[in-house]
Image (cartoon, rainbow, N blue to C red; front, side):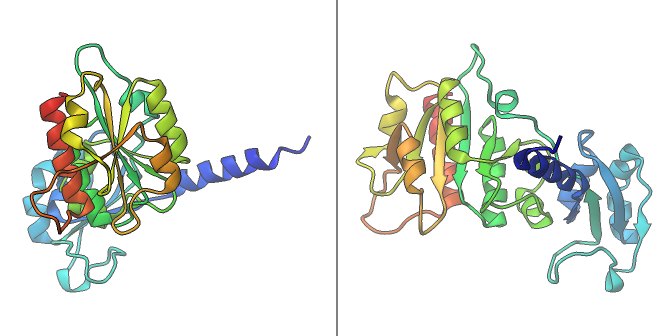
Length: 261
C-alpha cells in the first residue's frame, strides 16, 4: 500500500536532518563543543597554535585534529568568518521535545523564551547567552524563518549553544498553546502594550512564564499576538528609542528571574 504523502514528507525531513552537519568556528565555540559529550563531532581543522590552545578539550574529545595553514584554511566556512584557526564539523544537537525541556517542576518557577521569526544569528546567539545566564528552560523558535544552528550563531552564543536548549518547532502558535496547557503564562513583548512587563510579573497569578519576542521591525505576528495571554512593554524613561531584540530579551529575562524566579 502506498504511503500517504505526509508520511513520505516527514520521513524525508528526518533523513535530511540526520545527514545535516554544521561547521562551528572560533576558539570558544569549538572548545565548548569539543567538551560537550552530547555533541556528535566529526572533523576538526586547526592551526598549530589553535590546536595547542585547545589541547585539553581535544584530548578529552578523543578527536585527531587536521593541522592546517591559517592562510589556506580548508574548512568550508563563509568568507569573513573569524575562525581563529579552529573549525569543527558537528551534527546539530538534539534537545528532545517541548515537554522534555520545559516540563515544569514543583520546586521552582520556570521561564521560557519564544522567538517569532528572529532570523539574525547574532541576535539569537546573544539571546541564548542571556537565557543561559538567567536560567531559562529553553529558547523556542519556528523551524522556518528563524536562525538555524550555524557557526555564526554558535560564535555569538559564546558556548551557550552547547548548554542552552534551542528548540525549533514546526508551528510556533501550536507550541505556545502546548506551553499554556503545561501551565505557562505567555507574555508577548510589544512597544504599544498598555501594561508593563514588571506589573504583569508582579501579578499574583504569575507562575511559569514564557517571554515572547518578535523580529525587529515587524514585531510579533498577529497569530502570535492573539495566542499570548497578555501583551506587555518594557517601561522606558524616555518617549523615544527602543531596544533591539537581544537586549530586550536580556532585560525581560532579568525581570522575570527577579520577580518570578
